[in-house]
Length: 183
Image (tube, rainbow, N blue to C red; front, side, top):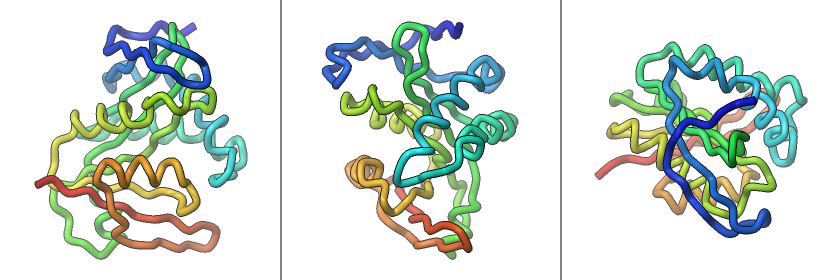
């Protein structure tokens, strides 16, 4: 059983009723404690439309998170209800998406993943996870890639100041590359 670290408590109405979620930054040195819960959450979130990933591919988010935790500028925030993980977001300093969008790197930060379990949606966890990660990663340019059919995610990102910078197509997928620049 995972014990949630102390953090910011939020009580919001959602489909789950009034629930006290705690959002907490997780240090890179503590990531291993949460990998199983992240894999389970990613397996539930990213197998659904519009992503439709195979379960093992979706659960591999935890493997990437573990590898990325060793990278400078790594930031992870998690949302808990009691001791259960209900969402997470993470990112790191990286300019790969800037280069993919044909932009010059400028000390960039990439928001790599943001996921909220379906029963916990509708109470602002996505926004709060997003903000927790970006607040911990001050920079001039933030980047992310998302599915063009991820309507709720696109709404969140646009509401938080992101804009589409490029469309990236590969053999098996299409992603919107989005950019948010500070002042």
